[in-house]
Image (tube, rainbow, N blue to C red; front, side, top):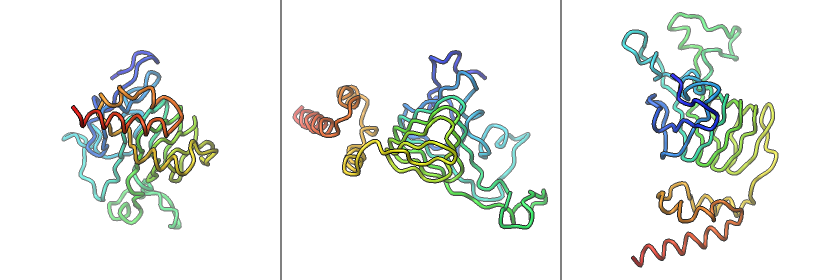
Length: 221
């Protein structure tokens, strides 16, 4: 199935995702999949609940707890991104052998969960970045192209490299706290549209003032 016919098109995830272990927030997050394919098939790897693993013909019941993928609103995912799920994939580095022996009891001994993977709101993930299992990416973070994210990323951090490291913070600590308190991504669409010029600039105080005026005007109506 091809959803994006051209690089100018995006796949809005709330319209396409069916895996019950992918937890979406809102209606604005997208995947730019023109050179690949659908988000569930090309981006999310090793996550039970896809069409194959839940099919009556090809599927199976999990023998352990399934880590879930949580995606905030307004997430921007570029082409070629990979989000790796599935814990340690039954390759246990504490054992003498990392081989995933196929017997059920052997698999149970080998498997270790990584915990849920959480990608916050208004996160931009660059082309061909790879997100490893169990990490949390904070609101407003930017993941550079081809970065390998192996640990948590703070809100409003810019990370790059293999493994990814913070190269700079987009705002100061006080501004980051105020932006997260504003949580503009939780606003109704009409408020976002009304205050869009203030969202599309860099002064946090101006957005705070506009939001307060909008709230006051709404209460008076």
